[in-house]
Length: 571
Image (cartoon, rainbow, N blue to C red):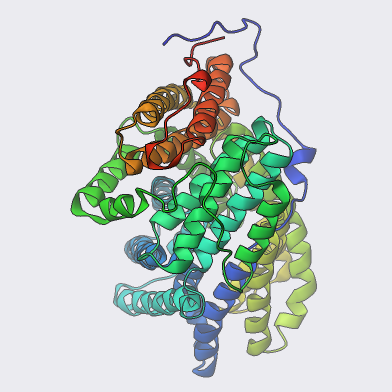
C-alpha cells in the first residue's frame, strides 16, 4: 500500500490549545471507587502510626497505600494479579531509591537515578497498560525517597512497611468482589450500551469510534473475567446488541433503538438483576467463541503470547522508546536546573516533568498547563489549611485523608482540578517529619513547578517521535488484514461460529488501535503528514464490514456480498 499524496503546505508544528485544555468534563462514573479505596487503605496505616507515635514513617506506608488507586476498571480475576504487580513494582522502585540514598549524598547522582527511574516507570506502565494514575505515583514515591535521609540498616524495615501497607491496599481493592463480583463487567457493558445508544441516535465518525472503543473494552473485560456465570452470559448478549447497534446504526436495521439501549444500560449499572435480552437480530441463541477465546487466553500458549506481546512493546522498535527518552531527558534537565539554581527540592521538579509526558506533544502541552495551574491554586489551598493541620497530629492525618479523597473525586473532571487537591496533600506529607516554614514550602513548590514544566515540555519538543507515523502504518496494515479475515469467515458458510465472532472482535480491536494511533500521531511535531485519506478509508471500510457481518443469520449466516467494503486504498 502506498501513501496518499499529502498537501505540501502542511505545517510541521501544530497549534497548541489553551481553553480546551482547562475545560471541565463530566466526572467518571466510578470516581468514588479509587477515592474511597485510597482513603480506606491509608487510614489504617496512618492511624496505626499515630497510635504508636511514629508518623515520621508515613512516607513508607503511603507508598503501599497509594497502590489502592490502581486496577478499578479491571474484573476481579485480573485485578488481583495487576494490583499485586503494582505493589511489587512500587516496592522495587522504593528499594532502588532507598539503597541509592543510603550510598550517596551527591545531588547529581540522585537526580540521574531519579530520571532513570521515572523513564523506566513510564515505559513499564504504558507497556502493561495498567491505566490511571499510571507512572506518576511511582515517580512521586521514588523521587521523594531519593532525597530522604537513609541508613542501610533501616531499609528492610521501611520496605516491610511498604509491603504491609500494599498488602492491605490489595485487600481493599478486592473487597467489593465479596458483594458484587461482576461489578466491573457490568459497568463496562453499561458504558458500551450507552455509547452504542449515542451512535444509534446520532451516527457519525465520532460516535462510531467511541462506540467501537467501548464495545472493545467490554469484550476485553468479559474475556478477562472469571468462569462464566448466568450474569456474565446476559452481559455477553447485551454487548452483542451494543455491537449490532453501532455497526449498523440505521432505522429499521434490526438493532435495538437508543432508548432501549439506554434503559438496558441503566439496569446493568444498577444493583438489581441484569437485563436478560432476547438474542440479537440475526444471531443464534447462544454466543459462540468467547468461552474458547477465554480458555485460549488462559492456556500456557495464550500466556506466552501475551508475554511476547509485552516484550514487543518494550523492544528496540517500540513506539514507547521516544516517550521514554523524553521522560529521561526532561526529568534530568528539570532536576539539574533546579539544583543549579539552588531552588527548593529537586524531586518536585522531577515529578512535575514526569507528569507531563502523554501520548504526544499536544497532550503533553495540555498536561503542562493543567499541572501548572493546579499547583498554583493548590499552594493557596495549602496556605489556608496549614494552620488547621498543625492543631494536632490527628488533624494532620485527617487533612491528608481529606485531600486524598478530594484528589480522586476531582481529577476525572480535569487534571488541573485534581492537582488543586494533590498539591496540598503532597506538601502536608512533609509535615509528618516536622514543621517547615510555610513561605519556604510555597515558594519552593511554585518555582519547582515552573522549572519542571518548562524543562519537561522543552524536552518533549526537542526529542522527536517519528515512530508515531510508523505505528499508524502498522495499524493500517493490521486493520486491512482483520477486515479481510472478517469478510472471509463471514462469507464462508462452513466457518465455525466461534471463528466469525473472534474475527469481528479482532476487527473492532484493530479499528480502536487505528484510531488511537492516528490521534497520537496527529498531535506530534516534526514528522511527515499523516495519510489522512487512507485512515478515513480504512475506518469506513472496517465499519462497513462490521455492519455486513452484523447481519449474519445464526451459525450459518453469511456476509451479504452487496455490502462488502472496498479496499483500504479506495478513494
